[in-house]
Length: 494
Image (cartoon, rainbow, N blue to C red; front, side):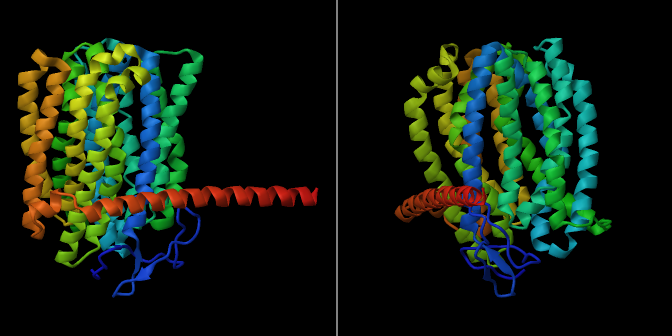
């Protein structure tokens, strides 16, 4: 690998020498690395991804409010029960191939077709196993739910194949630095889900089973767009070698094994409630989780850039510096957002979701604190994968899973949603401590550098926000000017 400079994300040079920027529609300014390769700005990629996450978050909050008011606590809990296991199995079924695909497509540009074929073969086997196992086990997994909810969850298992055909191949775009195209695909599912809820709202339909099944079926309409975008980066698939299959498995399986406890740490509380608790209790808890996750897209935008950024750096010192900077930014952003969510939760939750969800306020406040730690963990976990050490994230998540499972067994039934929230905070904290130790061993960066924000970090955050607002304003002004010019031209022709 060619060393990349400290402030850029190294990616292969496109064939035409430039790529369109999703924010402005103009070519991204690129520099040259020592090996003659193009370099894309990691900061711009993070800003683009963060902006997309904000859009997803806003739409997610809107759909959360609509679903809560449309279904009420009981129906909202049924909807969460339908989606819980299929979503978890969908991520598990890929066997970590999405993460492996990003890593190897950054490092082996000329063999992207082979690595994609290897990823599709391995992920297809995992999806088949998870689909069959989920269909058979669903009545036992959702034994506290009605038969209609169980069948709804079985139909929703087709989400697994959506992940395989739509989500996993688009990781090639992220590896190639095409963050605008990649983010555009990421927005589509939430837009379609919003459309389904709006249609249900106007039709007066409040059947969570019907609406959940309609949303997963409608998502297939974005397949042609995904195929065109991926084909532009991988024109032809190639038969993978045994070595490439082994490489995908060696990277993907530890990443998947780390993801399993990670998703369980995030979703085990809801999964257990779906099987053990009445839908109304689960509905209250889901609203608390939704409120606490309002700030996650900002941190998520940083995390998604970490893997290709670190994988594109050959200098260990540069990798450590980059990881420390982004982890401190994650803590800073999470803390600032959490202050606002904590202050507004007592009034905001009843106002937006309805008075029937007032019991979720205390759990939401605890989960907001847990969300700050979870965002920090996400950045460090992605950092370990970007350093080629997915097993490090696995060890941390296994520790947290043990804390989560034991804590829920002790506190879920006697304390309900408050007990689940406290357990989440404890589990995320254990993960954070372990990941800090792993990052320090891998990079030599001190704990203070990884976890304690500094004044320059705050200034950098403010500068980036101002830059984003300025770029957005300029884009809007450019669009208005273009429309006015088109209107004037049309009037002259007329």
